[in-house]
Amino acid sequence: MLSVEAIDLYYGASHTLRRVSLTARKGEVTCILGRNGVGKTSLLRAIFGLQPIRSGRISWENRTLNQLPPHERARAGLALVPQGREVFPRLTVRENLETGFAILPPRERRIPEETFTLFPVLREMLNRRGGDLSGGQQQQLAIARALVTRPRLLILDEPTEGIQPSIIKDIERVIRTLAARGDMAILLVEQYFEFARDLADAYLVLQRGEVVLSGRRENMNEAAVRGYLTV
Image 1: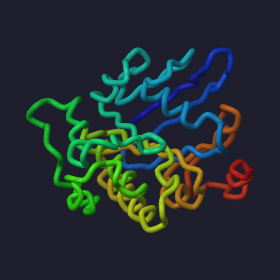
Image 2: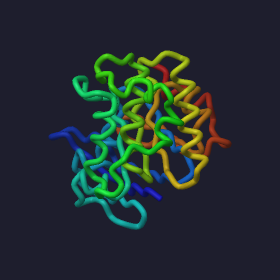
Image 3: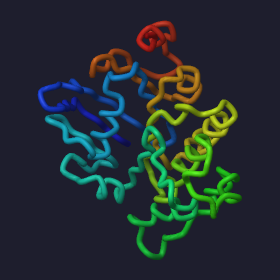
Image 4: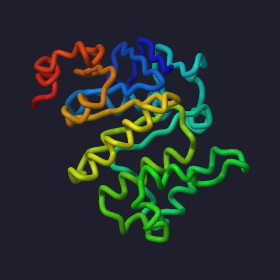
């Protein structure tokens, strides 16, 4: 289980996250909701060690992560799919996937066959450059690249942003499949309410760097959640 306990995060003098807590369990999708600028991506950066926290505790599988650099967190089983995909445009699809080998021992440095079961289009495009793919194909590549590292905690930052509806359905199917395996916790930041609601086992809503709503999907007050998402 991922446990984030009362963390505070600053950018200079700006208090961006205020005593934020959450848990994410294996076999479940935990969704973080909120408008732009409320601290969602900052929370993910804190979990992955890309931004230091001022106070609080972040632990994964009963191991405190606070002092670990990002590459050690990746070796501990965390994988981040960043907002905007950030594939390497001049590398081929195969080479993009192989960048995930960096944290793996030599005997595990292979692209799992499951990658192409989940994203069949990637097999057909292995020799195409990442920058030549459509936005939806790049998003599939970004998720697949994260899965190459064999994560036990998969963190996705707005995977539906700028993606056509047919690809959104494919991504939803993949997330459901991964969660159903039971050996991976999935943390999803999303603004597309229906996508998040349909996938979430648990959720929390951020407003001005604070958690204002949280709970299980079955107890969600949709009107209240939508109120915090409406601009």
